[in-house]
Image (cartoon, rainbow over all chains, first blue to last red; front, side, top):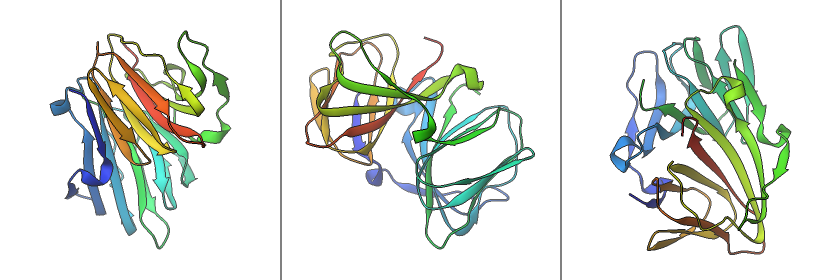
Length: 114
Length: 114
């Protein structure tokens, strides 16, 4: 079904995965919206927050909206600021870190069929 | 392969589809990056610009980055500003319009397997 909503209207959930610190997620577009192929999520990392250094069988497509941080992927590391686009291939260890005193926020999209 | 790049480093192409006006696209994440499931594109609409009122068999997942506009989808219409999230289901006629005197920019993601 058609949906047009401001991201701030979508409820924010704390991410409690092992290795996560200071992260919330808003599930902007989900399977429940009729999105069969991929899901759009909005992540916010507090200062000092990070995602776990982990890998999985699916890719990430990321667009950075606010803040400053870094991304590790395999043997590579890159600084990220608003407007940065990141592609994390399947099966490669990766991690996002907030490196600033303000929130780091980004969109992260994943396939719905893992 | 891992990719981390600012969107402005991705070349901008004019969109020349019938019914399009004043649109450019940057193809941020494509199949060539190894993105098998879905593609991330960055659209900019000039003041007065619009996409065609059309439908197709695949969905759109949109996040508005800058500007002010509107989206028509079927019998619905909504105003869009930065932070708006839009889901356009498959097979429904839709159109994006820039309603302001500045550029309207948004991410639009689509499945790669249509």
